[in-house]
Image (cartoon, rainbow, N blue to C red):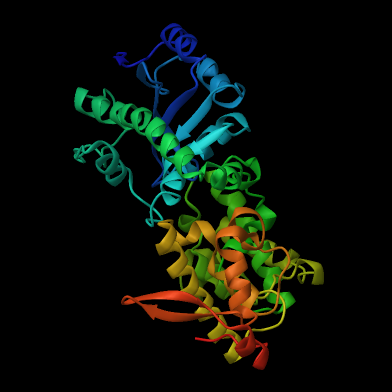
Length: 401
């Protein structure tokens, strides 16, 4: 594989992109800093195909990233391969307003080939290539210049290893017939809607036990205010106000700005500074949440109750057994909310009740809920057991354990 020197000029980047633009796939990774900012500060981009690899310095004076960004978001003929690429995709979306497509994430791919749900990159490399990575440069300050050789070698290694692993993983996915299992997950990762946070919906990310429309209305107003403040100041949300403080302000509305000086989580200066005034203005403008905007209860539909909760626990046990049999991460098949929804009586709009998920698990889950499947111990292992028709008929609504 030809490894290029650190690319720091527009001409060198354009030449490199021209060499790889007809590749079947490219592996992509980024190094960034965001501990002290709202927007991630892009410090390095690494790209490799089967024959070429390079690290690109986006902080180099005058460098034009357009050829690379065009390749990432506009060239549909090249598959873009990431590992745990959510934050990488977010950076590209922030730069272009688009997401890379088509996309493949090896962390998700590994879920279809083993039971690990969030396998780290170093573990992935060791599992597929037998290489133990040097983690010494992992927590380096990527924004400092100049970058030394060790940093650059470490960064490029992330994509050169990925470019070797991906064809091996793809071959195994094809052999096992599980490649199509990942289509929905990959499209979700590439969906721009997942990276375009609407300030008016920011409240949905904050835990709030109350279901009172006035409280949730204040939470929505406060979360939107904080989102705009954080973006304007380029500070992490928590540096403006922490989630728990927002929730407390929504539940116990202060009478005036002077009261902010006594709120836990805010300093005494908030009773008189400009940002405190803007917070009070946001609260004053808040309106109760409309009925159609109220969050769904979890699970949606009828409440579980004690018996339903037991059925949900049985479904979770069934999922654990099935994922072990298939050697696949349970989360790829179904999530807890889906299991609880099924236990609560829902059948529609549940991912595990359609497509390949239904074939490998959903139909068995339905059989369990409707009393056609139970559990048995065979050879020291817990397995699913079909219930005889006569027994099932005697108690048609029972889930046998």
